[in-house]
Image (tube, rainbow, N blue to C red; front, side, top):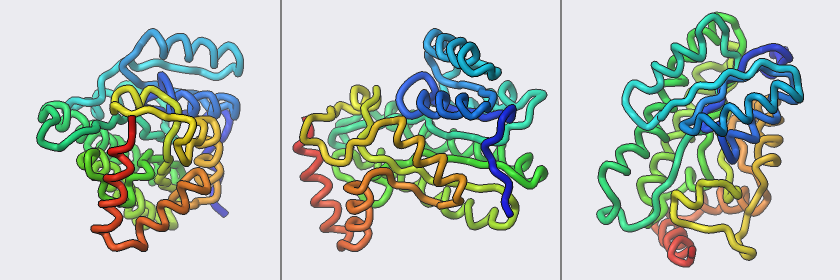
Amino acid sequence: MKKAVIQRARWALVTGASSGIGEAFARALATKGMNLVLAARREEQLRALAEQLSGEHGVQAEVVAIDLGGPGSAERLWAEAAQDRPIHLLVNNAGFGLRGRFEALAGSRLAEMVQLNCVTLMELAHLALPGMRDRGEGGIINVGSIVSFQPVPLMAAYAASKAFVLSLSEALREENRGSGVRVLALCPGPVPSGFQEVAGTTIGDRTLGVVSAAEVVRLALRGLDRDAGVIVPGIANRAGAVAAQLLPRGLAARIAGQVVRKMR
């Protein structure tokens, strides 16, 4: 029987922890007694969250204020996060999206997005796995998206970056089968957070598939416990993911493009 990854007094590293899904992961893990290393750019928000969680749940909560969108950032974070402590759970949540015609978007921003969404995520998983395999237990949650399952015009590079996350996660799960290490791809649909402001989208009253960050995290942690492999929160989102895989790729892309064009 596989050991539970989430146990009291163990350490979890959560990236993008200052808001949204990352903050929800931090809160949920603290309630379960896990110690936390919280990483994000916004130090003030991180410290306030760390102090609150330590006070309410008696856990240790360390803060690493870092921009993970640049080369070498994964190594710098890991050197600080894993110093003198084993990381039993890595939550690779940091990321952002860009909306618009591909050629009209700033090349530097596209490169930063791919660095954060793909390269830093991959490097952190690469750094975490050896220790987890040596201990014979551990977990990695990589946050993808509902767009991981299909091409999305006007969010072309973002969707491609999240397809990378899904493919990498599924392959790593299979590579580590029987090792005691679990790898989960979490592919949420719309979640109220700061993501929409950066991506240039909004969540309206008629937006389908909206799931709260707390519920997304609840389903993710349950999925990790069950070694589910891939979790798509929300019935509408699961139906959309299945449809995207069944439809011809060109048709799926055309429909996705129509949806994005209607976004405010």
